[in-house]
Amino acid sequence: MARPDLESRLTQALARAGRPSTDFDLNPEVASPGQTLRQAGVLIAVDPGRETVVLTKRSPALKHHPGQVAFPGGKLEITDADVTACALREAREEVGLDPACVRVLGQMPPHETVTGFHMTPVIGLIEGPYTPRAEWGEVSEVFTVPLAHVTDPARFVVQSRAWRGSLRHYYTVPYGPYYIWGASARILRALAERMA
Image (cartoon, rainbow, N blue to C red; front, side, top):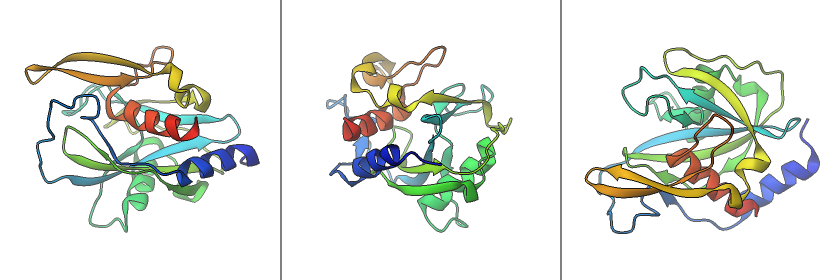
């Protein structure tokens, strides 16, 4: 069951004014390519008892973002009612989280990725029994990180690497052996700003 203060903090964070974010936030000299963005939903699934967030390590066999840390989620399918339904469906498929065990609190503003997605983060509390189960075609590992770690702005570091002929800057929020960066870190940074 959710601790009232945790639920209140998350609800208040969602109610604060915010703006969409992009993978280009730290790179103003690099313009967004202006492509048609594909809708996607990701689930920020919070275990209220442990105050942790569920994350995945993507399969190293995937064509896009192999081995990277990500939220459960994916592109909107024609059978999804909306991005929340998409995020819940993907969480069931990727990490075995039954949508009936998730109480959705709301959505954060969308995030534009360099790979052409308009990704909406959905925040939900896990309220039923849940045993993580990785879908091996897409996910090599399911793990959790403390919510306090990924919502502390002081833990985020800006790093950079060469990308498409220029230096690209991005947020990171490492945790133990996990290198959380890119869109996942940017979304968590936006949540951290709202909860600070």
